[in-house]
Length: 79
Image 1 (cartoon, helix red, strand yellow):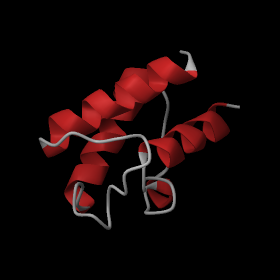
Image 2: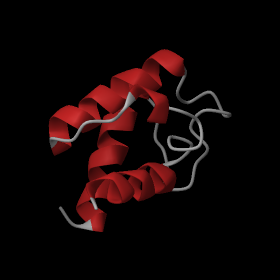
Image 3: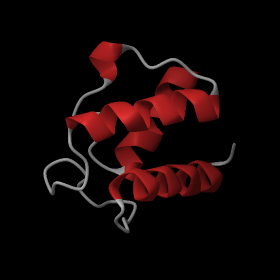
């Protein structure tokens, strides 16, 4: 999956979960777009959609603060 495809995938999933439009650099947690339950739901969607496993300890604000940080995190665990 290309970086643009991954960004589009993440944006789509976040918008489905949060019922809000988001940009690539929008702060997802501090702004209240996603709460803790939404972040877990998003991580499950990512695992299922990308066929990867996200360790529970990695589901945190540092890795899930924006579409860019999520994309960077996914690239790191896939390498």
